[in-house]
Image (cartoon, rainbow, N blue to C red; front, top):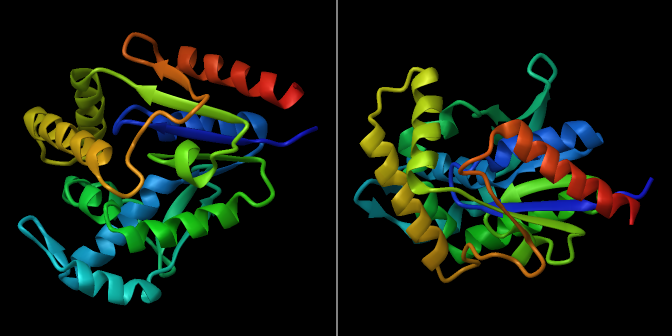
Length: 229
């Protein structure tokens, strides 16, 4: 059976990773969460003292990029891939609100994006891959057989993200989450390097008023059509 690349882009907290994981499992494809890769770099910069809420020493991070390695390990118990930073599993650490507040600034840095895109393209060399992020269909895999662009209303995304963080025990308010999402959308769409845009030929999937199962079935149908074409 023919293998394809599925590129999923869209705004923060739209459920891109959830959909990508579902498709990868259904099709027996590899799943790569590119957002997690940038989050790992943000965590590294935070730990090194290169970035904080009101400062960012961009040059120190650039000079240190050669010491950053981002990979994924498979967790058999959870049946999912988890992010590793220099061989340390950091899946939980990169999902907190502190890293979320820093990752857009990290993702603006040209040298960071160049390194991440190079790693991502290597991962997709043999196809059979589902990758989600902000510039997968527009930059990383412009020739992907299936491109999906996800969106949803601000308030709906904020509520979903808030519920997710509270379930993990994070002490956070809905207003803080909403502010973070609005800020990240602005950063993602306005940055100079590879901004978030709807890629050419991408199928728009607005999940404001549909549930995860409906979303998954719609996307799976699109994928199957491309595979059998």
